[in-house]
Image 1 (cartoon, helix red, strand yellow):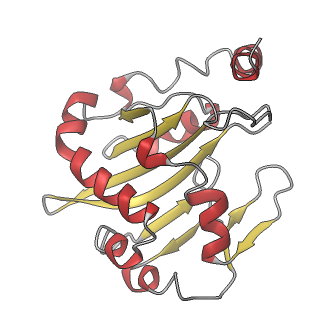
Image 2: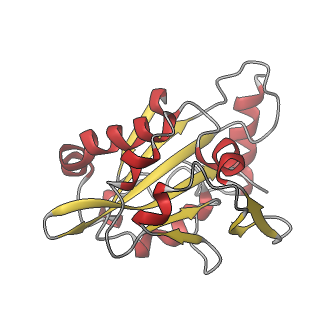
Length: 201
């Protein structure tokens, strides 16, 4: 049996609600269909900017007052790094090691340069070409469901890989996703969170 099938079956044993929690559109105030019509073009522009490391372009999407929060393991915590538009613009040139959050297992600080963070938590898969894109729906990622109350008035776009695109990848955590969270201000939808989703036990 292929390892990605085994991993999903194992997840169902450990987290029996993992495929159903978060799929209910009532979790969000905006339906999946409407969310797609509102944000699909902007979400694509954001993911293209991330892929191309076009930080100048990315900064233009960032919420002017809330800034942009970087989240590594689905749920927001007090340790997650929040940067404003000006701080985003200098990330690519900066050699500073930021504390982005805490490791999900050891709880030790995640202290990385932006380039290091990019490879591990921002664009570890080709999310622009993800086989599944969900609008105000989230597949897998049990921990994500405990954060939905924070997102009810926002739009979530999930770029989802049900299995790792590399056929030689044989780790149990075979799925991966990147979520963009948008919040409205004065009729404009801004990027407020980038969430790296993966299965951790």
